[in-house]
Length: 148
Image 1 (cartoon, rainbow, N blue to C red):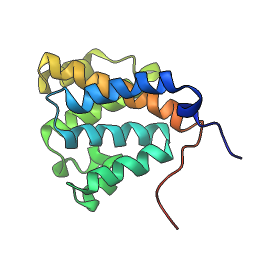
Image 2: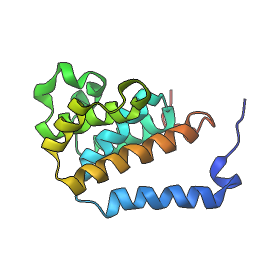
Image 3: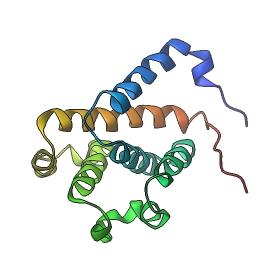
């Protein structure tokens, strides 16, 4: 079934979300690869095919396919990920699943130890932005670039 094209129907809403995306990707001190890693993990949790496809492709420009493939189980292969990447992935899971985790004090302490205050806020904005995009991409079934 064909679904609505949300960004054509609500261009002002799309523009507002794009503004947050541009802030995250252009105005933070977070490394670009870390941003896309977080985008990918959040999208995996939320099962947004379009965003998983897109951010996997973005990461393939700078990261090995082996590492990308193991993102869903990053905590089992922690040697493949830097301390900062592990902290970002853990915080991304905590914030994305906030209804279950309640953003625990332990998780907050771990994220705070790995990121400067401004960077932690920017990381959390990054996570929130991708959750917002996933909540449009998944229900409206944005297409993927992948071919059979």
